[in-house]
Length: 559
Image 1: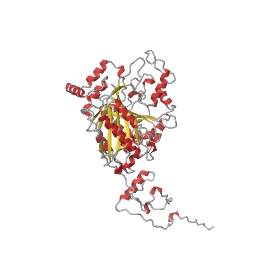
Image 2: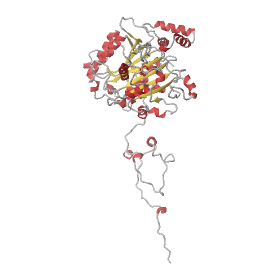
Image 3: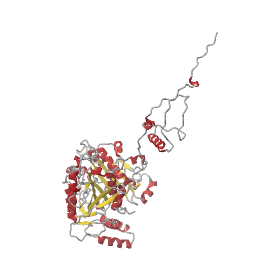
Image 4: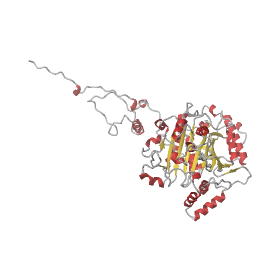
């Protein structure tokens, strides 16, 4: 099924009648260093990277004297950056940065509303994941959760309204962000420690549908403690097919399972494990020599690597960090099938895969026509060929480029702005040089950033207004209670009933189970919603001993 557009996805995540302004910046895929280190003597795997950056702003109410022009006044509230790495056999969606300014309170949302930042993050990630899925190619969503006061908005830490999560809260928050994406796919078949399927009956179901599993590693925490970071929905998953695992998806994302550990861990930008890998590489004398084993002297296995990560300064400075992966297998590809690096395949295997993925000649001609419409893309691997075949499904990327001679292109219908790599990094770099310590300064910084973007693309109307369509979840409304309803039944300590006392049954014919808080709350809400129910008046009663509990003195027989 074709994924909905970004605007429709965000509208379904934003509360009803709430208006936000969205800007989606993106770059074309460009060659980049490989995520995985090659084996000794081999070349790097051809890899491309494309950047996606989304900003969310509001229109605050300001006095007319402060409005210098007729342009609308905007205030940033949230931004997130995502990098998409593409190889011939794997697509990696990496969450680079995410931050908020703390000015969300200007929307005056009800306190019981769902987290708007979490909903926007889930919708944007789901849109990126859906638009980059390729037939027969595995996709992995990866992120590194580390709590900091600010990432993208300098000075926002000075805003007392900004809600800064601690280390544990941030890991749990990201797990709840990606969990809805995980739930859109079927569970994977259970595999053993070697990656082989343990349940044959689930292989057919998994082969016909898209399956997914989430993996989490928190250095310094054992498996039992790491499970506390899983989202609440993980408690209802069957033990035979869990959706969340406390392990590293080695067989699913690594191209060579027999390679040394330095070749089994991806290296992302601003990644603590990448810096640890770089330090360990000094133990290998010559990684370019084919005769070299590529083994470190101190760490021999991938399990030892993750154990030593807990002692790194970035992971042992008193704060916990989390490494999270969501592996999505397309239909026909089981999770037990290991990853194969494109550098280890010959040309015959690549040609065979291309032929099998092409159903007919008409489809081949249609794919060639779609490829001829897209210019300026790097095509040094089979991954780009699959990407071009999927371009007609993504209405964001098939628009004609603008006629103005600028270094950026503008997609008017969806609000997506295509920039070259240099302009993109200059614009993101400008954001971290501004100031958001107070609302007035934040409005000026937002205007400066938008003005710079307008200069790059040669036009001003580049913000997409999105009006929310999400209805609030019906919850029990907490109305002011009467004096007789201040204490719930679970808080009243009743005296122990005697054997002769009579028990009055409830309206359902039996007593409520006092051991279940949910049952008590639901029972109390049913009584409160009943039209005939009113305040119960407790009248004092006289306690009379039952005849069965009166002990009579035994008569003594006269001799």
